[in-house]
Amino acid sequence: MEDLVPLPPSGRTFRVVYRIRLSDADARGRLRLDAVARYLQDAAIDDVAETNWGAPEHLWVLRSVRIDVLKPFLEDAEARIVTWGSSFSSLAAGRRWSLTGDAGGAIQVDSTWIHLGADARPARIGHGFEDYAEAAQGRVASTKLTLLAPTIDGNRVTWPLRATDVDRMGHVNNAAYWAAIEHRLAGRTPDLRQPHRARLEYRHPIDLDEQVKLAEATHDGRYGAAFLVGGRAKAVAWVERLRS
Image (tube, rainbow, N blue to C red):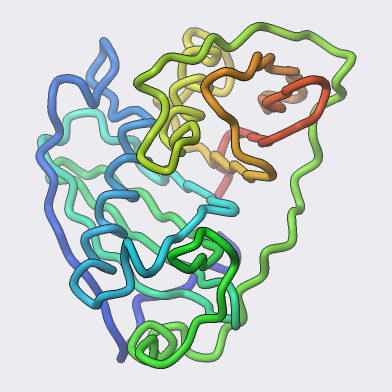
């Protein structure tokens, strides 16, 4: 698998173990993507809370994430997570997670986050971030978007938002997007019980009062969705079979 950043020999790492609860798995016991997203988010929040790089002085907005499910969590009762800095720039930072299950599950994740100040505006990452930067080993964080949106004049379905989809930032939470993908892929290809890659790029926040439609596309076992508000793609996701 290309360009995965390995566990760093130095710099900060953060470790945590989560029990996989009943609400985290689908009807056949597979750990869902939206549950994985919550685990990732919670581990990241706990990490920066320890180093004083969390709220309220520092806010982090997810720009893009790639989830490589090497071995789906099917029989696992817990997920052991290690996370560290994977890249660094003046206004953004990359974060990696490695998830291993007690029954063989394995997931590798890379992501890019934009740094905001207490006023929720982009802010330079200053003094005190050295341990994260050291773990990044000179890799530069890029906020460039690379996913192509499915054709917006293709198949569209309504995505009804719920009050529980919104977090303390006032926008639809990262995990909620994956809940929509999980719902649309139920019984379809790619099969999420097989190794797969799931990518999501966030272009603009979505608020609770907005009317959202998913513009969908399937091709050669790949599934894509653009989260549209008024014809504007606010996020783009693609899921495909992971080939070795």
